[in-house]
Image (cartoon, rainbow, N blue to C red; front, side, top):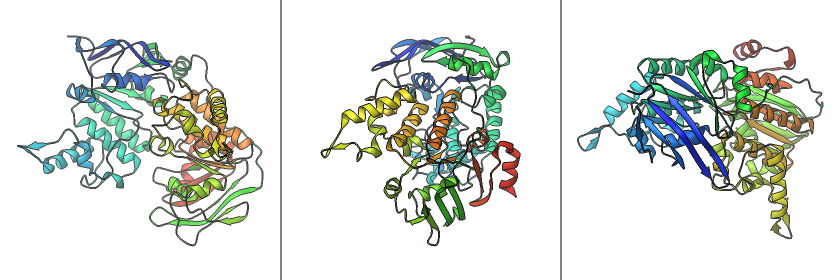
Length: 495
């Protein structure tokens, strides 16, 4: 019997213009939690896509229990009990929780699907994750956090021997994450092996047994977690010493760019008022479900607040009926769901980057593609976006590099206010520091910036001022961020 349940040997994967994986090895022991680490674009997701048959390797082999196996589709992977919970949610909104959990893996009684059995088993799987909800309700009614837990339950329905978790805690609260970790430890004791991809190194140190570290499509290091520090992990990932973003005291104008008065949207938020000054970074904090995203979707015109609330830009009342109006008024928006709302997957990096800027790029009624190319190349170099080139499809970039393209899109547009919802979710330490530097650069150039974040370290590092929300209400504002702790923010949220 092999020491490893899964071995990937010499895996190479080449896309047009780039070698995404270069002779990478990965070995997973039975019943271990194995962290797969690396910066965005290091090749982690590509390696996992090869393991589950989403991509076909150009070179290399996969062994299970010491015997070579060929996996050419996700169905073959799941039949071998290798299952992935992807970073981006891929549930069917109009289907029920139970239907989503057993899609393609239906519970059959004779020739008919037994929905009674499916609903019973779905409830039991969710209970393993400490979740008790009505499994007959449609997925579209669930928060992103609960949708993530449904995705994990769907994977568990295949009785996985190898469970791949790609950024599983990205949309979870601390309490939900703790429940997930408890479930992971129970699965480990039952003999399930887990490949754990995360940029939260505290989670790695607390939960993982071993780690494989990748950089630029190559294997850098395999180590026992007890034999390495967080700082050493970061250095191996980046190939250099990386300093995490720290709070910077900035001088901010007293001139208000945007003001909201008594914004309300029934069932989401009530009587929310705030200002954002020119050149200010307003960090918006609160637990998942606090109503932060919902408020700023209304500010940007994605949804409409109830009559009675008012919005002003530079003291003049505005009616933001839809995002086109917001963009004309000089606003930009970076969604928390970048794959669904941020990028157009079938278009190139350049097309995605200049999407809101076509009016500015017109010359004699035609789009000046030379200028568009110059702008795109400028931001690819400036943001160090890992891509085969401006014409590469954006869907082939890592999540972190996609996020850089979205931020560059608004910088190229020359906006005056930028709303960023979870701007560094699923992004590595090095890229996170780069995004933070870009946010400060925007603000230094006079742009009013709103950063909505569930990461308290990010709120405290970036915010010139903190707006605290809880259950759809503004609980207060913190001005002296330099002297503020996580406890201070939480106490304000619950007061």
